Amino acid sequence: GIRRDTAQAYAPPRQLRPATARDLDFMKTFFVTGGAGFIGSAFIRSLISEDPDVRIINYDSLTYAGNLENLAEIDDTRHVFVHGDICDRSSVLAALPDDADAIFNFAAESHVDRSIHGPEDFIQTNILGTFRLLEAVRTYWNELETQEKQNFRFLHVSTDEVYGSLTLNEPAFTEEHPYQPNSPYSASKASSDHLVRAYHHTYKLPVLTTNCSNNYGPFQFPEKLIPLMIVNALTGKS
Image 1 (cartoon, rainbow, N blue to C red):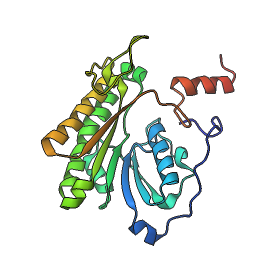
Image 2: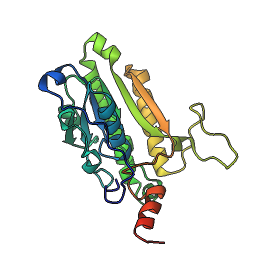
Image 3: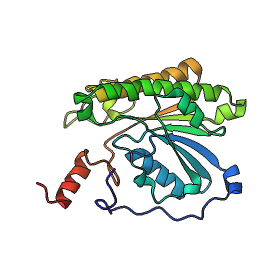
Image 4: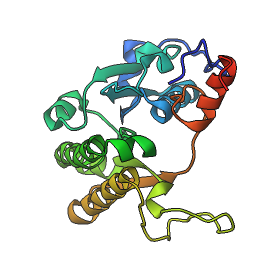
């Protein structure tokens, strides 16, 4: 994301006392993939700031868009970083804690222009990576007790790009729109959405999928339009 020396318009999270070992025994545990990226790190900062009863295992491969500086100000006693790739099923299983209450999948290649010039990374991470992550999660979930199975959730973060493009006067997309991906990026995310849906219907894995639109904010990697314009303005580029 954008380093703090080029993006100061960010209110640091509310400071909480560090968690003790006894506190950790009673906390909810969330396993977050892609938590060093723009959206994933925003989620972690918000959750750590607002909920004193949660701890997070942050699993990220630290590609060009992942930056642990995005999480420099949070309570480290409730945040554990694990360097790993969702394409590595055994690594995911090794990193998963025994008491994960939910898994949040933010890990993805996510830039349309990059997908046009180099689609293979998008196929590997967004399709194959999601498949291997789902396989690891299914293994983990099948070993849970009945009540833990019922309470568990896998949340898959996707994009509205899977629905295609809108003209200027068309209404916004809804979840009822058919999938019409138009780039390797959106096609790879559509594929991952279908896999998540299939794992729910085939294996009964309890899943949720979100299709968010045009996110922007602090620590966003400056290849995206808004941070790129801000960085160019700050550095005097036209």
